[in-house]
Length: 336
Image 1 (cartoon, rainbow, N blue to C red):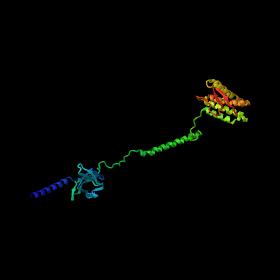
Image 2 (cartoon, helix red, strand yellow):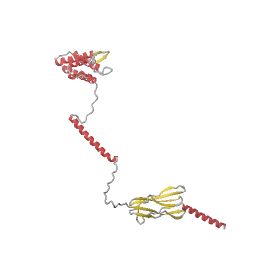
Image 3 (cartoon, rainbow, N blue to C red):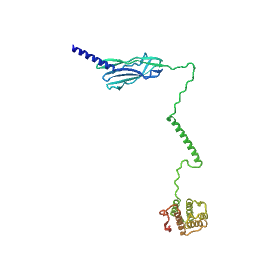
Image 4 (cartoon, rainbow, N blue to C red):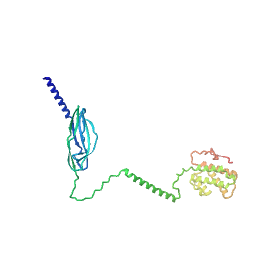
C-alpha cells in the first residue's frame, strides 16, 4: 500500500513538473503597427520563449494570409537571444506583410512544434488584427491640381560641376583678355621673369675686363676704344648716382658732380675728368693719345669704379681689374 502511494506521488510530481515547464513556453505574435494605409508595409513578429533544453520548430507561414487579403513579401532568419533566466532563450522571426484592400483583417494564431525530451507537442501564438485604411477623399472640393514634387536641397556633389565650369570659363576669359593686352604692347604672352638686376659696379667691371682683353686701341681703333670706355662709365654713373650721364656731354656730367660734392672725392673726380676729356679729344678733335694715356684711362676707369661702388669693404674684385688698393695708393698694372 505504501509503495503504491509513493509511485502515485512520483507520477503526479512528474506531471506537475512537466506542466510547469510547459507553462514557461510562451509563443506570441505582434505587429510593429496595427494600422496602415493601402500598400504600406508592416512587420509581423512571431516570438517564442522556451527552456534551452526544448527543441522548437517554427510554423510555416504561407505567402498569403486570410484568403489572399494579406500578402507576405519577405521573411527574415530566426534570431536567437538569451532570456533573463539563463535556462531560457527567445527566438524571433519577422515577416514583411502588406495589403491592397482596405478593411480589418485577422491574422490567425500560428502553432510552434516543441520537442521536450522526446515528447512532441505544439504551442499556439495569439492572433492579431491588421487595419488597412484607404486615403480619405474630400468630394466637396472638386478636382484640384496635382501637387508638384518637392524640391530636394542641392548637395555639394551636385553643384561642384557648375562651380568648376564657372571657374574654367573665368580662366578662359582672363587668358583671352591678358593675351590681347600683351599683343597690344608687342610683348610675348608668356615671358620669363626678369633676372635680378646686378649691381652697377659688377656690370661696369665686367665691361672694363672685356675692353682690356680685346685691346682694340692697339689695333688702331682708338676712337672705338674711348667710346666703349666712356659708355661703360656713363652706364655705371647712371645706375650708381642716378645722373643721366648717357644723355649728357662731359661738361654736364662734371657739373652734376660739382653740384653734389658729397658724391665724389677730389681724386675720383680728377680721374673721371681725365677719362672724359681725353675721350672728347679723341672723338671730336682727332687727337692721337700716347700709349701711356690709353693705359692710364683704363686704370683710372677701374680706380673710379672700385672707389665709388656701393660696398662697405672696398677690395680688389679679382684678377683683371688692373688696380690694387694699398693704403689709398693706386698701383698701375702694365697693360700689354
